[in-house]
Image 1 (tube, rainbow, N blue to C red):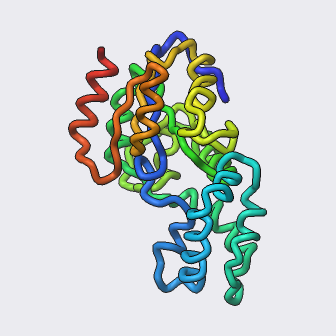
Image 2 (tube, rainbow, N blue to C red; image 1 turned 180 degrees about the vertical axis):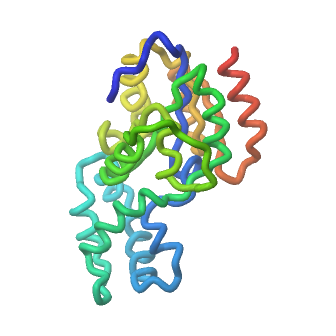
Length: 232
């Protein structure tokens, strides 16, 4: 984790990933394409993984890596669409993950007054892919593209469960605390935007401010509340 520029900002806005910034979680190129040879099999096997909380948590907290998880899915190969292809496509698809551009624009509007930090229950492959995209040099330019590759540089940092070793709702103090401490901030200086009620409640219990918001919710009330909090 990079040491933030302490003399620039005195607040932090954490924003959730799945269902908040991201419109898709895994393999959008396959799961959004009904004609893909692996669509049916991957959809079924991934549903089994997502329904198994213990197995999924192993991946999302870094106790199992993507190579092991993909190999264990049991997706039946079809011609050249093998397990190796599926593993590589997991990485490639991070570039094209659909993102919530309207929310990202609203977050860009407060970056002159607060750090904007993505808070994700994410896999090792996601964290690596996000960081590669965010590390690209050059000045960001407005774009019509609605993918992570186009927008990753718009955020200041990523906090990811697979790197921290705990899920966001499992131990919010351990998940958010180190970043706040490194920034010279406290939970009272932080705002969380997330779709989970339990996560928002846990964040408030630590002294932070939280707004529950999901992809299909109206954006204007969130933008107004965020601007008011940053200005206040």
